[in-house]
Image (cartoon, rainbow, N blue to C red):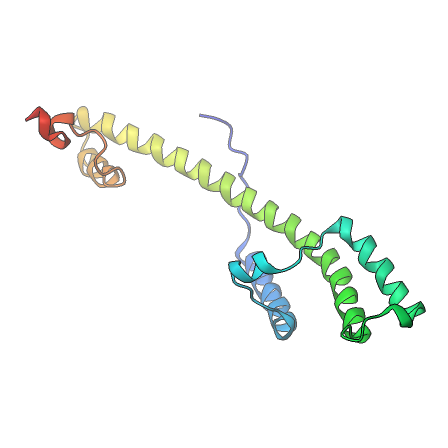
Length: 161
């Protein structure tokens, strides 16, 4: 079996603190959050890191050359949108990194746990074949995770009957 890379259990109090802090963040930001449908996201103009310089320059011109600003553009709204975009980009990058680390850790821990479970299942099957007490029940219960695996082709192939 491969080495176990995820071998330090995260203490319950640490996870409780993290959960509380995530709740605090949700409470602080929820009045300002917007939820978009996939269709709404698709229709919106996209702005990424490369577009930010363009948007900032246009914002500067909107402030220094008010005569070029179309009547339908609210400069105060533009200022708010740009400021929040810049501030949220920085925070969002940190969340993206944190989410990736969390996802990788869940993936690794889950993979290792699953490999251990498979080893126990295979050992239970072997022990059942050797009539070790209780092994047959364990192997049967664990086998339920794999419905249909190991059935004969004739069971599922009507032409074979």
